[in-house]
Amino acid sequence: MKLFRTGLVGLLVAASVVFVPTASADPDAVAAAKDKLDRIHEEAAQLDAQLIETITRAEESEAKLEVLKQDLSAQESKVSQLETNLGDLAMMQLNGGGLGGGVDITGQLLGSTDDTTFLSGLSTIQNETDRGVADLQTLQVEQARLDTLQKQQESISESLNADVDAKVKLSKEYEAKEAEAQQVYDRLSAEEQERLRKLEEQRQQEEAAREQSARESASPNPAPAPSTGAGDKSDPPASSSGGGSGRAQQAVSYALAQVGKGYVMGTAGPSTFDCSGLMLAAYKQVGISLPRTSQAQISAGTSVSKGDLQPGDLVFYYSGITHVGMYIGNGQIVHAANPRSGVVTASVNSMPFAGARRVA
Image 1: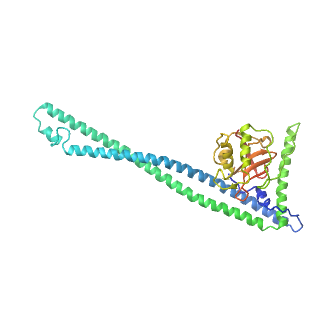
Image 2: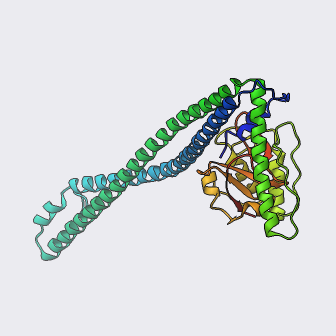
Image 3: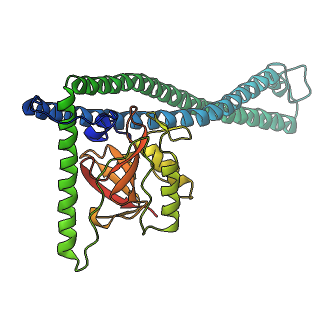
């Protein structure tokens, strides 16, 4: 889904001026800020995932209600027609219908003087009684079905209303986390902000070095170490390296073309995206259908190790699988980061790695 974070990089890269660290930077303050920002980002990611699930449920409820509305209309017409038929039958019997009119069937039967007329009248009474009983039973069955549909409509409507309220609540909580993170960052001095950025860069470099070392140990011809720089809105996206199927490369091209567009929770293009929405839209362009949420997308395709990533692979982050990006090669991903950063490129190591899947 969408993540409120390109880690600390999302907050820090926004400042284009590079400050030289000085002794006035308080290491304890920077460490405390980093820990707090990491916690806030994780909490925001969880809210983000909950919101996407809520939006998905609401959309499903709306679709069910639309179908149910048509079923209810047809069922109401059926019940109304059965009620009309029963009423007509009752009026016919009351007015003497069946054996010549003017006198009710029972009266004609009692007044008959021969066995043939009597038996014929008796048969007519039995047939109309059976018809009335059958129509009444049918009406009862169809009315019960109508009642069931009405209860389903009420239940789905209540669920939809609850999800709509939850969407508003989650959106406000998410925005509050954004504001809280910004406040933490703003309270740092320029030197402390720069130190925070350096710490994040160092973490990414160390992660990349560990991966490179593991690859060199497993291969006699190790590949060059991947770049660890994080992209931003103003920088052109890194071009994809080799590998990946034709459709995967097309998905990468689509995702990269969205760099600079905005991030809005619950959207999948064309002008704004959340994290899973960007993946959904990119692969939809090449005829591949993905689930809506990052938690569901991690079940698509086949599992890929971090060391075997190819352009087009989906890369998931955080223990709760609350964020997803697309690997584009050269140690980079493209993703819808958060409302502040929008769609950007970043290091594949910019967030805690949770898994990867190849879907093309």
